[in-house]
Image 1 (spheres, one colour):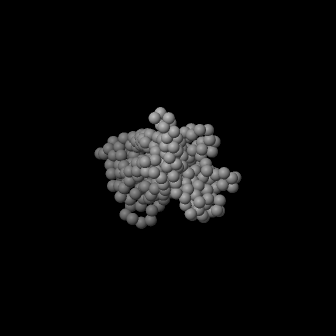
Image 2: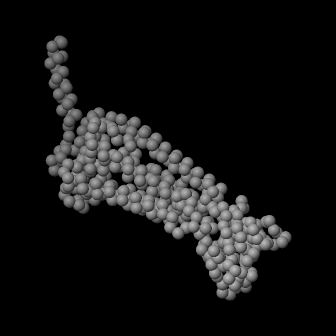
Image 3: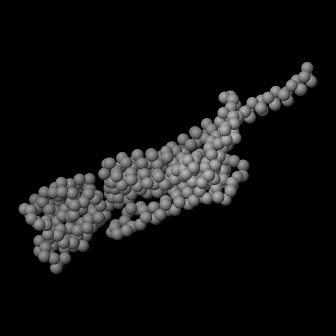
Length: 368
């Protein structure tokens, strides 16, 4: 009996091996490894690699096959770097806040910023896949390089998206810029899709087919999914926490000008009428129409600079003798008015001009 058992065991093992390697042959001669025994544990342990340009780099064999994935990666990074440099420029603003963050933003922008943070985190699949798969295989330079490229591209997309999110002062600008950055982040997927449709050469088409058929052994898919969820949650918490801190500083007028100086030149024809409005205006704790108020620190009668919502202009109004020390309605009676604007930042006012009562032509001049 013992000898019979030893003779039958190799046959049983051979049959099992034959069944596990079962595969169907396609018309083009390639083997479809997705089909097989439903109970086959080896097939269950196989994982598809992402259908993108980075996987094409990993599978590529010839120098010509490396050209497309490397070119796409260089193009992505170049675009993102150029956008970053442009976003960090100060241009001609007189007062520059940290990262050019607006002084205050309306509620529509605040809600859009929160939604954009969530979308940017859960669309960062390249970053998550690269982090989880780097150093997960035996020494393979191309495998490591492809995942490092995913990480670099994912970090750049998240970073540029975050800058756009915090710098936006209108909802439409936020979503237009955000969509553009997300499109740049999808260029690697787009390049693979075009290659699979034979948009480029036959070499790229064959390479895309090999990527689609390639499998890697991964016996820890459940752990992978759980770790991916943890990474997404951590990124989301960090971005929401940073955004909340910015909301808090904006609410406390941390980015607003602490003071602004208005000077009416003596050579101006309006000097006799508006000279008492010259002086330094200090940031007050009061808000009108969601914007800061500035109170004159030095002057004859005292005045304040505030935003009039009915005409969408910043106005300079003087106190009455009876109401001195109280902030009145900036739309009721004002001595100077700015151009029509919806800005929350007083530093963006270009001119202040003298209004003409009872209609007529507005006489304007620049007060610096």
